[in-house]
Image (cartoon, rainbow, N blue to C red):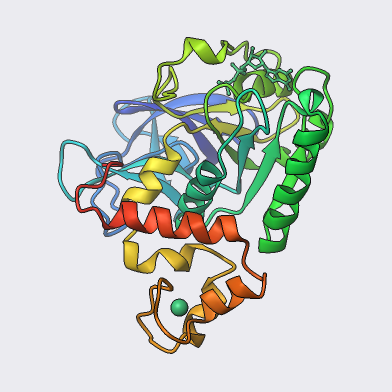
Length: 311
Ligand code: GDP
Ligand code: ZN
């Protein structure tokens, strides 16, 4: 019996990297039911599996899927109440952002952070294109980093153009399953190519993406890092995560609000205009950043609209 990690799935065939480094293709042995959730795909990239030979022929089959420590899921667009697993067993996520060309909106960063909190994945915010930052951008970067780190998120600085911070990013990602996400044009493909020159991902100008900023490849792919570990490019993580969240529980996914929720006078406090709200008290004394609270209100309004735009 051999153990490995699923690195690609196409229909009923799954590509598995064994712990020895060897890559094999295998099918699932019969029906393996792992959990209660109704899934459209029983095997996902990131799954840890045990393989062996089939009883009937020479082919390789997956005998067992280990319990997933976490997973990114999306609701199936075709089958109601069914879920599709995008990736499993993620160790950490990196949001790639930039202060300029294009400037990443703080609302975007908050939305992705909420989605990743929902999936219980720890996250680092990487500010790329630091080679382009002038005085104004440096000031903006300084306060944004401070606010994010106060909340508990790690931040890093990189330039895919001059190589700054790449070694540090490589070290952080080593031997882990990493998810990378971010808006179009911030340099994700260029960064991934720097981390693994063999990838040769297509990079492009901001203008080559459509207006909604949709990525050209809608599916997540798992790439091997030359020094060990994997990186998964997951364009839709924000939408998938938010689609699962109820407006009334949104503050639960703001780590700076979560510990205060029980201190509000009303146990169903929405932190909007209720009296004796601990979240708003923390806002007035500066413990909660204004932009984060504004993002909270805005995203809450969006989630309250029944016809969620993310679905
Ligand atoms: P993606 O949409 O996030 O994958 O972005 P790309 O990797 O396609 O990069 C978009 C554009 O930004 C390309 O023209 C890259 O050459 C450029 N770019 C990427 N990283 C940097 C960087 O660190 N500094 C500068 N100046 N340009 C960069
Ligand atoms: Zn409150």
